[in-house]
Length: 143
Image (cartoon, rainbow, N blue to C red):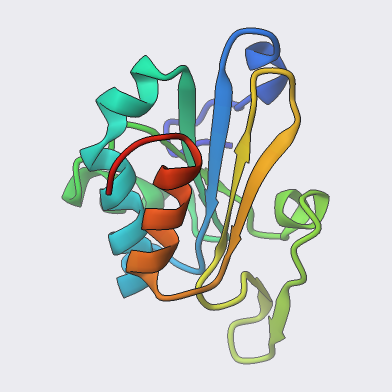
């Protein structure tokens, strides 16, 4: 479910647009801010190249809405409280007893998927600036 309360269906993009799925640990963390703002700042270029962008974390729709508004993010944020979406991408989740739910690993992971549904780039962890640069480089956009 997106922060706007809609269901996001990537299947509707197949044959039309690529998809960048940016998994991050939590709204407002340094890594999430750096990565999502890098995508925000190049959103028009990504759109022109035919990419739809989404951010995914285990946070609630309410937290996502506040994060999206604070940083003027022009793309949907998707809640994955139980980690089901992350697991479909093969991400190994951390289980933290204090948090009470599965969490994405620190540093997150980003997948670049072409218009045919094939994963063409997978950026894992790393320093947030390096992560953002590598994702943008994978789609031919300067950082």
